[in-house]
Length: 366
Image 1 (tube, one colour):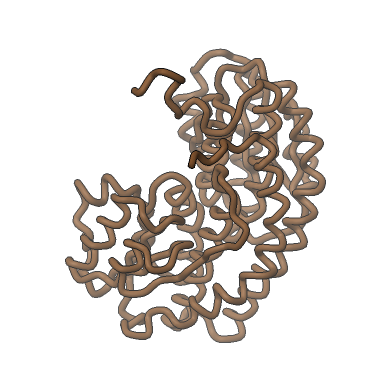
Image 2 (cartoon, one colour; image 1 turned 180 degrees about the horizontal axis):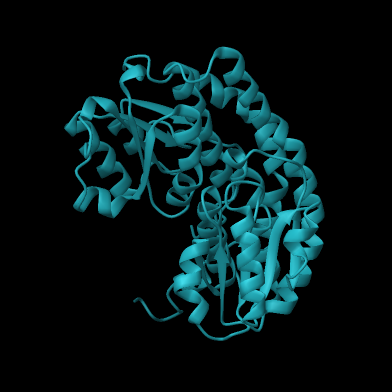
């Protein structure tokens, strides 16, 4: 039986479920995270490798800073093909000091499963981060953090992305506590911060929909758009671009702020919509500079900034405000929230449905 293709409005339903998902499931996810690494020696872990494809890779990029700052370990996000075909899974450290986190919502992504198998053979501790129990990925890992969600429907990943990011952040806190970088009170306070973000998620989803519809109407003529961010927001930029592509078929590219200054600023059309993800944090001033520079080049700049950050939006062509305050390590949970409604409204405006361009045309098997 063929499953009907989802309409663009599925993205709105996904976004509207995020706050309740965070409130309802963070506790259960955390209980699992606290039980991880019981058979390993967490104090010996010096490096974390996070392997994934698509949204899972974007989630890995989004949580890199959290592992480095909260757990005090080197962190290397990598997509599965380079990991399986080029990288030494233990490089540059001895295998016993490496924790590999293999991320796949379905638990069946072939190269992610192969990555887990390869890392485990090399002697690294492997944790599967997945929504699917008893999957090929869980069977290939030493342990698993299951982030499954009820009531799922076919859709570009939104709820699953939040679950993957949340699960990874909880592992970072667990590792930081196990290695003695975080004491119990500090670790529990960080966990409470994550749950408390549900209010900001709910408020942002409620208020950003209208601005996203307006922006979608104004950029629907563009053949391509870019999304920029650095640090955790680079992962957010990659993810946001992916949602636009999957939902509306418009080509979108995620890029680092500084890399855009060196390369993509020379691209045409000069009025290309350019979304800049600019949460509070290390790169905020640089993001503001890029907003000004891109606007000066004629780009239609859309600033994704805190609702009270007038400086960041002053020179932007449009603004998508984010409600609530958040530390930079946790900002990926708030600053992607515009992506689903933007992609939905853009698809509606263009008369398109999610994943349509990736399906064979009728009568064409190729």
